[in-house]
Image (tube, rainbow, N blue to C red; front, side):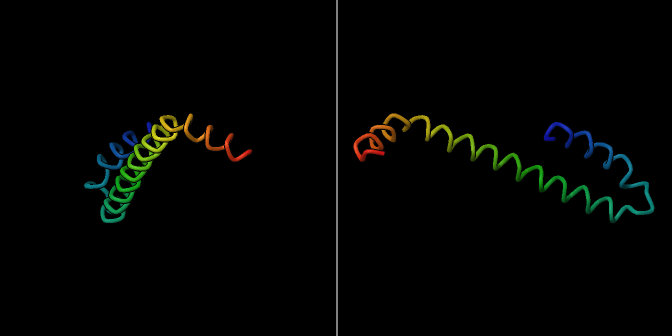
Length: 69
């Protein structure tokens, strides 16, 4: 899905200024861009969280073993 965003945005960019519905298309372009940035931010955040989990995995496992879980 993420790889489709640039394609959609480039198509919208081509028609948004020549269409009679340019306001709507500009709004769509802005919303898609904002959503794309949010997806990228969340992916980065998720990757960082996974990295912290993997770095602390042995500590977490030893804590679970000592509590009997």
